[in-house]
Image 1: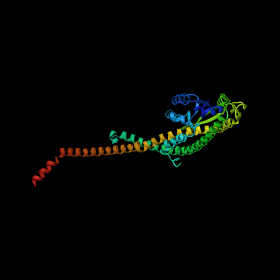
Image 2: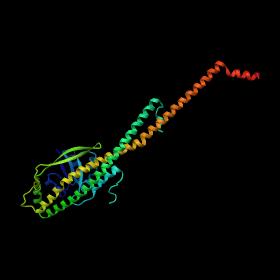
Image 3: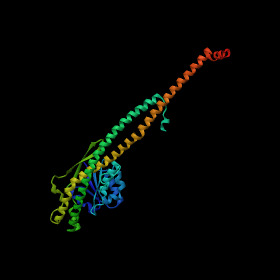
Image 4: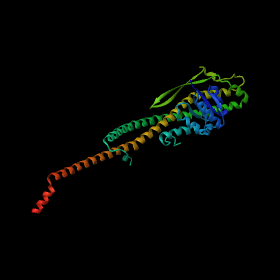
Length: 106
Length: 226
């Protein structure tokens, strides 16, 4: 039985708590990296993380890319969409195909 | 050239031939695998992109709702209202095998079946905006989970495709040409050895006949007489 975690600044994520997801308000990159590491080794299958925070701990997230669990998914925070989430999809395409063939037109 | 490292023997030749057959077969299989993976990946990544756009739009509007809700009531009341969630979400995960890539499948369960359990507060002290905000977030949760599933699948498949592509290229451009040139080198060398053995035998035969019948001396005598 796995659970779902949400990582980010408090204002972006407090709503998810009502849905029954576990929220972990963090803003410091060092602390976030530690938390992510801790959550990844535990009972969490999906970890949502705000784009702003993810941008600061890219290295840690890249490490989890190849593992089956957990899935680290970027979501836009309250401050707006930075396009980082779409960037990560694009990265997958580039890794697989060699160049960005799907979204290069927009 | 790498072919100088092999010993030109018949045993090595058989070994290299076997290697070539295996490599060719492996190359064909891996190429098929890559093509099929690519097809499925492109399908999935398109879906992933559409889902992501939908989820991002959903979260954006939910965030907007939350900001509005927050503006209408004090911070303390909001925090208290959301402090103790009633609902809990659990995930059942299993894996699905797509072209030898294990992709996760999530199935989510809520602690209580009642959809109204997302409101973890009494309605007396909170604004109706908060209800809307929570509802809008609850509505996109299934899509968010689907997105998590697809995005992870895409990431895993992308790395598998990369690996397979490397293998295909290595077989096509390194292993197979190397085996071919090794085979060529060994056959040439063996043929050469055979020819030189034959020549040596002919030479030996000549020498033996010379020793027995003294052809040269006889010829010289004939010439002297003439």
